[in-house]
Image 1: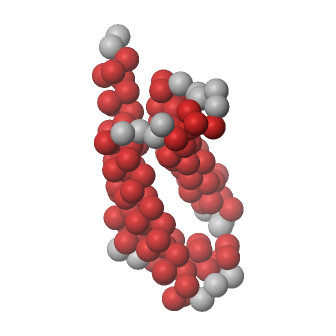
Image 2: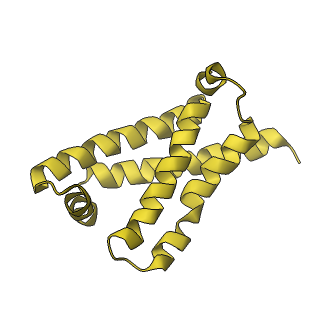
Length: 126
């Protein structure tokens, strides 16, 4: 099978995930604000500001993955996707909410593996 096609499927998938999460964050998704408050012990205004910043970062990740996937950004997508899936049971949601979101980190991980793991620091940023 054509690896370029697989790469594009993964790029669109990862970008879609981060675009969707970014839009939800910019809309101030209430549950996410409460999770931030609970995890960081901050007031609602601070949690809302942090969520807005996360939303903007998510949109930037989506754009970079679509336009030119920088491996460091794709690695961030793996880590952030894993954390945002894991946060569900951390805040009291069922473990299945974590399991259901394995693709949130699995798709960026597959993309990173397809792109190739860099052998040097410079390889992460080009």
